[in-house]
Image (tube, protein in one colour):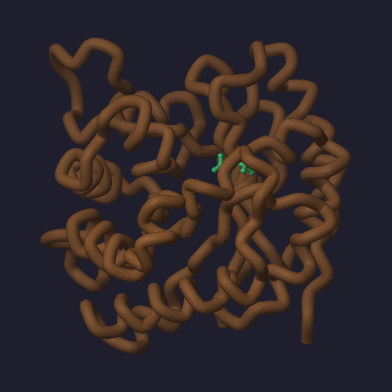
Length: 253
Ligand code: PEP
């Protein structure tokens, strides 16, 4: 049985004070929710504040990226140990904004994933097609390639610490959401592909999140799909009321 997880990616938003306030409001919205996980990824500068604010709750704190090296001359990078030092135990890797705006390619993403897993971080590995890929009917080819490159040389046991986030690039921050049916089709494909790459049992235990304009009014439909195990939320994660409604999605029996 896969435990659902709702993740909030705060991107380059919030000062430390704003982050603390938002985290406190989300802690209140999570009270009594033991059948799902909640993960918050504030900017690096606010990780310590958010970790302190959520301590005593089961909220997981994550970085928005991580270096594959332990330390050294890597200006602008953050090591796994630095994330742990700020209270984070998870990390988002391969977000489409890193791929598109900062030129991160599949090989670099694979190195980051290896480094993060070796250090013991929980990894949220993002994949997704662009509008051009979708229109050219290349969606599944692109996702397959991103999965194979991103997970190169990872043994099946490591997948226990990996969550995949399917985020169609055309749906991120655009207000366009993949329909729950479209998302389910892709999630089913991802699970089957992981089954082919590893074992069916590993695929069955893998959590696959949907991301792309998730809002209070579409979360219940998305979560009703059999292969959607949660959401990675951007814009709506910055508003406590919206995010708390998303966290409190209706669980289908
Ligand atoms: C994201 O940042 O991963 C994301 C899905 O953003 P939004 O929810 O704003 O589309």
